[in-house]
Image (cartoon, rainbow, N blue to C red; front, top):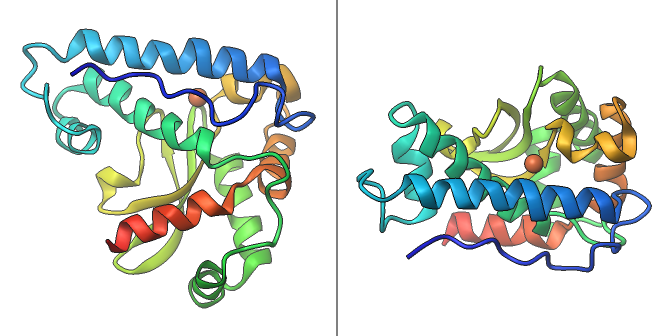
Length: 200
Ligand code: FE2
């Protein structure tokens, strides 16, 4: 069965002023749609058809770059929309996550700084992550469409640092976009859902 673009879980203007309707129209309707369409074109006869998206990401890594790029980006963006919400961000963390961030990452303020620095430090296109690996939290970054799945981890939270994610609203000011994402957009409920998925 072909993969489909999931609808945005909110209106296009829901994340303003931190992320504009124009950004979401381009990013979701054009960029994410293109990853889905290209993946669906590449799958027939590839040996990956019929597999779950997560399995395609893991199994195509290092073996089929075009399929990996588009499957990785479909996975990443599907969660990216849900990692944001109107009125999100800040320190209102679910208790279990707060405990883990305190224990593994030195507290919320250090997590915030390290996550923003990871996004700033990713040269060119890519993602910054809050990753669960071997039962512990880590802040990591990956290039292009890569994600923690291919490094033995599980993504709890990710932020897209491709220019298409912020150029309309922030031009070249990637740090401002990252601060707005962390302070005003993160949907901690979806982070918690990802944590529950990891342990199920
Ligand atoms: Fe993107």
